[in-house]
Image 1: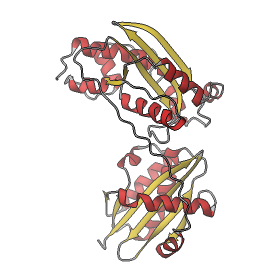
Image 2: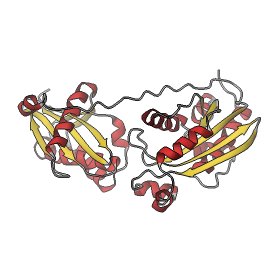
Image 3: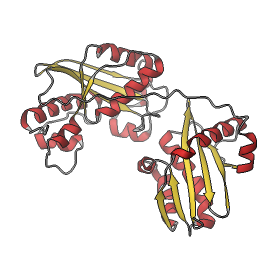
Image 4: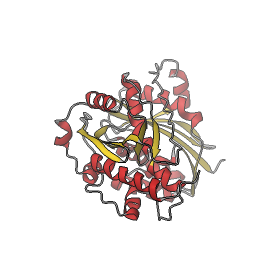
Length: 333
């Protein structure tokens, strides 16, 4: 192990403040912790800023080692602009990189994050903590125990299209559930093969919409700033769906998880639904396509989406996609 570096990291968000904590073990030389306060950055951008700050320190002396990365590989798939490009170049400069189990570091990183916040370090300044300093102070750290929300999806396994239900689509600020804020929802109710009602609303997330999301969706800051706040709009959505037994969407687990987590956090009634995922249906049908993205499947069936990446048009297109898959494809039981 003396030719390796173990680097564990985690991202934290409290209200609108983002921070990161790191554990670093340069095997045979030294180990310790680091903390960085990233201010009110968007979580995706913050990850790359913090990661780059640490990589710059390590690459100066230790790029001839293998870097064991103890964090979710999903982090490396997030957008980050020029900062991501710089960080990826530094990653490539190491002898090799491998992913390493993260769970054993989670509790200590929580404590380091709390220690760093309590010490009130300046924004974007990487602060190091030695093992001895951490051991001395760890009993002083008061951890705020965050309630863990469990999402338990129940998927519809029938071979025929549900007679009644609703197609849901959300536009949000992040692909990561723990940091995402809803900015728009669209719902299409259906019964016996007909669309019976629709509902759309912008949602005020009380934060700036990331540029990438604005460009993708066309939703402006003004659109959400003048919309009702999250609690009121999600409460209205839950009321609208209260009698719904089947909830449909493309990768519906994301939309359902985001809504369900919100309901648990704010004490709203949770949806008791079976999920119908058109992505899962397409895979189950053994469709011959290059990928299972919604736009690919819509093109396959000749379905028009009048405004991709907007909640109500996406929900509407997804209804017709579900209808086509159930009626024209062979679902493998």
